Image 1 (cartoon, rainbow, N blue to C red):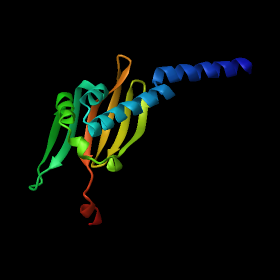
Image 2 (image 1 turned 180 degrees about the horizontal axis):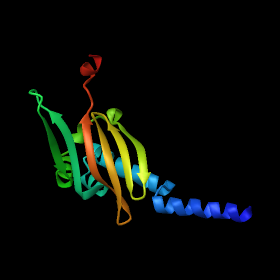
Image 3 (image 1 turned 90 degrees about the vertical axis):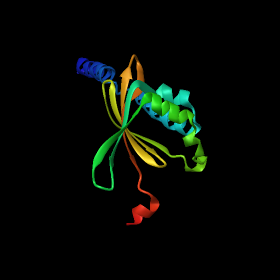
Image 4 (image 1 turned 45 degrees about the vertical axis):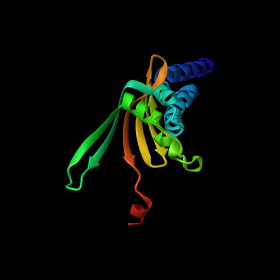
Length: 150
């Protein structure tokens, strides 16, 4: 019985290290998403850049008035430059939302929902060279308050 218990503990520890679902990994994943959000609101391009893979793809699906859809895209460089431009700094501190929900983690891959004041980001965060970074973002604007009433 004792050897069965020891075997179970070993298996649990081994599984956690292989699948990357440790508390430290989850905290690092959350910190990555928060660096992205805080960097935006602070206009801190370095903080934003620390959260991103240089190969980041940030996308939004848009539909025009004629009903035709297209995919808007942003690179890591464009996102960092936009952050440095300071647009996020215009959001009053009392209105800055940065709610992080880790939806799933398997090995070196995580799916995260980040809710900001004006939009929602669905992120794929990967562990690269021992560091969690944002690889993909699919985002959507939140409906305006008058649109929510309809």
